Image (tube, rainbow, N blue to C red; front, side, top):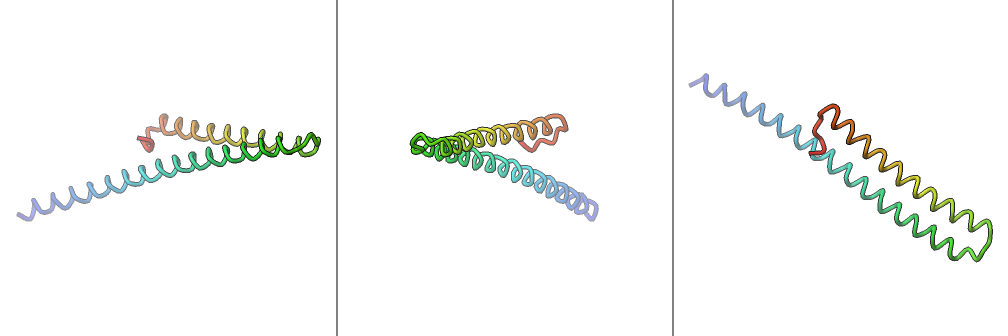
Amino acid sequence: MAASSFDINIGSEVQSRVAVNSSLGTFVSKSISAVIMVAGLATFIYMIYGGVQWVTSGGEKGKLEEARNRITNAILGLAIVAASWAIFRLIDYFFGIGITK
């Protein structure tokens, strides 16, 4: 009987390690998804703010340039977030980490 309880203890330890690894992967995956959603929402708000600034500039060159720069920066930020997500997916695929599953 001592041998079977030993086998059960080893099995439960392995199962707990697998559970920890899968919960860590789930946490990382959900965290990255949340960061990407927040970045997308921030980009949207930043672009709306730049558009409102453009409309209310009244034709002044300085304000118009500031609004254009704000919209350009929002688009560049969104491109950086999209590129970082793509790099993350590539790393996950090539190394077989399996975090995004």
